[in-house]
Length: 215
Image (cartoon, rainbow, N blue to C red; front, side):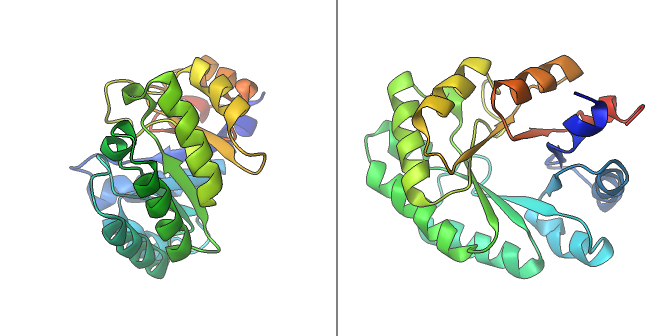
């Protein structure tokens, strides 16, 4: 793959808690210049980014990074983000509920956020580093049934990021309509290409600049 082809699958990301507008603006300008799939930015900056860069595909995160919030809070967050101009929503599931066997809570929160952002892309972050193989299979079914567009591996704030083995597991257990986003730990071009070859449609990372030369 060329650098430009890889960049077309990248969600160019800045989610640092100390990110200033100047940092977010730089990410947005780079995304437009190098034609990344989107920018993924804190919800606080969505309205300003969309107003400043109306042609930009803007993604933001909901229930981030721990996912403990009630479904009603995540639903409200998502609706506010869409109202501000977000084109894509990446929500974190309630990992605690999943690990406690409360699949209904996880399914209901996915459905609630899906309803709040109908017409926009919904990606569901399942934080694979905390899950057993059985839990990963269960959450694949929940993401599929909940109507999400993507299953996403990680927040990047957990104990580990994306693993290639999880992409194969996802591929075998998600519905046909669900795509895969990998995130967390990407530092090299080779990593990005390997995950795309394994079946990912998107990669979330803050290291896209390594691809800019020659893109």
